[in-house]
Image 1 (spheres, rainbow, N blue to C red):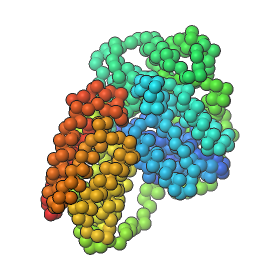
Image 2: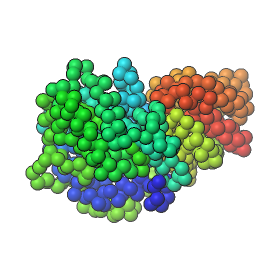
Image 3: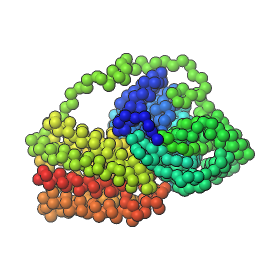
Image 4: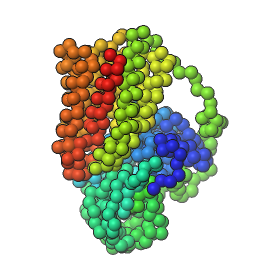
Length: 583
């Protein structure tokens, strides 16, 4: 378990602060993560990677010459927000455009995609690429749905080495696509991981058993088998990966491969070496030439006891990029010339930046009516934060049935931050629209992940509809909820029946619009819609997930409601209470 922490909610920020203090030779802190402390040639493509905390050396430990130009760092097991990614990418950009790279998880896809749009709006050319190497998370016919695990490293490195050679953005992207198409990973675990402040692991494995096909966010494996010997584990990993070769590789014999045996957190290096001796022998027997193997902790999951094996099938070009030198805090290869310091590097330390006095925030002008409405919005967000806090453990338990169990933690972080930001804006005299917009940004930043992106979208859509000039009536609120429903579906791609929050949001929005259309006051209309939401959330227990981290474990979730749907239903009822109090 994780023993050394202060406030669990501050763990990721404090870990990043300590990391940058320890590695100033390589990185410097920026809002949202870190960038290289060394100079990058003007016009070079900036490769910006990122994901949640809890996976070190991924992602911050891979920033440096020959690898990433910057890393956006989210909260524990949660993707960074679009604002954080945009901030890091802007700091890393030197005129050649930006390639955003990340593991293929719904929250990362949403946030990195939004960040790319914001960069484009700033006039910075940006592309995105999701690594999808975990063969246990989807079949070959659905390879685009696979998760990204330890295969992140060879794919990141290929793209970054190509960028170092001065290739333009589109060619760097093609290198990433080539490396991703030829990378496969598979893992096993003997125990789950425990998040800071938690009193139990996200999943457990029975005594003398192992989980097969696990994820790196505490997702349970797709099956269980008897605990193997080291040689048996090696055989399972190798034989599983050799069953699925890239389309242009007919036979492993005579092929070259970059090989990574990755420890997930608490498997000791000596154990890894015992396994690797057999991995190397089995690959040799299959006629595979191993190129620059890596054995160690490269993509971890806190204290998870487990290992994964990654094979990247090399051609001449990919081998050149895999062998290219790199110098980062956690990954070094070959030799590079002496580094030049970044001329734009701030002269103050991170500690001095933390104590700098920020400029006084300002808010747009608002009407008296909108400021009064902002008081109701603040009360509603307070009710949201309180109901989420009260049910956080329950939400985590529901989520852990087929997912990673962090929904309650993420919702608590997001709702608490949203209420705090809203209170600050309200105290400055902001209208309802601005209060919701500030809450939206705070929720997305602190929660990260899919729920952070979606709740940020919901609050921002509501804020846009309410604005700062007029007193919002029931019809306007219903219109905002309808717009939020459409925006969430467009952003996440989910529809009713996919077993997500959309299964509640759509009927809630429809019921609210119908009730306000009948002329019901907002509190009464909301009451009716909240009842509809509760029934819809309960109905998700009968569905099988078609999206998100629960999809590989669809059957396990049957009989359990979707955590996101359940939390939305709880929130709609809590907001009704706030509307009654401010009627």
